[in-house]
Image 1 (cartoon, rainbow, N blue to C red):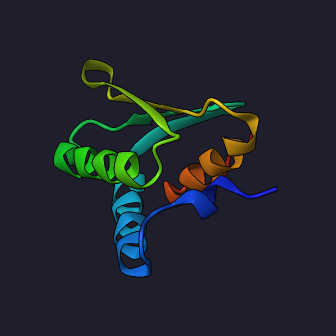
Image 2: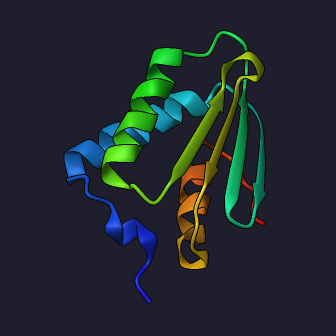
Length: 103
């Protein structure tokens, strides 16, 4: 079975840049909830919204299997996948954001 992370279209330099974006966003994470097929992230007030937009845009380009929903007034980011074999990719995002959660 191929891991969804193998589907990522980023080269090594862009992958490092994305990891750094997640690291910076991770310092502003208030709460994460990990369920099968979904990762929900609540960000603290004052986080860098442009950085979040950039991280989402890069993910949509490189890993189109992710589904993103962002509710600004709640500072709530929901990331989902449709196929069970893509679920592990959510663990990778949770880890990149500094969360130690699993479904």
